[in-house]
Length: 332
Image (spheres, one colour):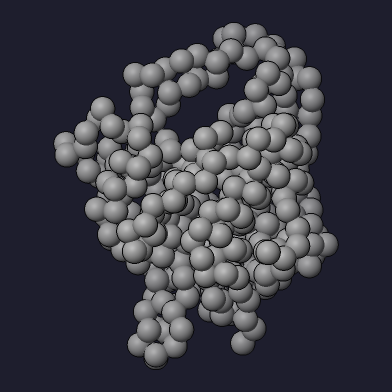
């Protein structure tokens, strides 16, 4: 049976990215999970200033990032039997990434994301069509063994069952006195919409990665009345509240400010963002995740993982696309 360092699980899609000067940012402080809105004139025809075509999806982005650091990686993704799917498959081959867990869906098309960015601040809003990713099946996951499993946003109806398969691998290795794999989880919209299902999974996860909005949403939804709302924007408070859910290690990314962490020994971490010229923010979270996982895999140190997560996400911001600016080479 073939072995890889990391299996990444989630989506692989095609990204259509465009920039415009015609949007307006609106403050929405009354909604803690949507504090800034991007608005356009209703019914208007909006001119696009720049257009780019790239590949994306959490599993694909993180797989490319890990491969750049020299790890053996295999994305577990479902793509359509169409032009976009063939492009993605050939892209993986070109990158020399293991395609043994890639499935081709004869019925459903490859997913697409349409990404709107303002030229003024280069931040974005994403409209995503998951396509074949909704029908991802992880039943063939045992065709490869791995030291780590990275689970990104899952779109299928029975997403919890798919994660259970990964947890079962961990339990099996424990029973056989084999080295247990680590499980990293960066959940998505479907998971937060069904947040109560997350509660039984979280204690089995070795690392949970969230952005700040996601951390606020999870805390509010599952802890509810016990939350001190006047402190909900404080990242350290969010870490403490999330620890109540029996999560071993937690990282909260906070955009331009940096990232906060809490490890399984109760130690807090903060790593400030690097001052770089921001060209594009798409994929910054995935870049952080791949830098973090690569460094933790290779050094075993949480502080080094935080450092390389920030380095990789900072580098990614300097080029358009979720993978074009990613760092390459060995973790030093």
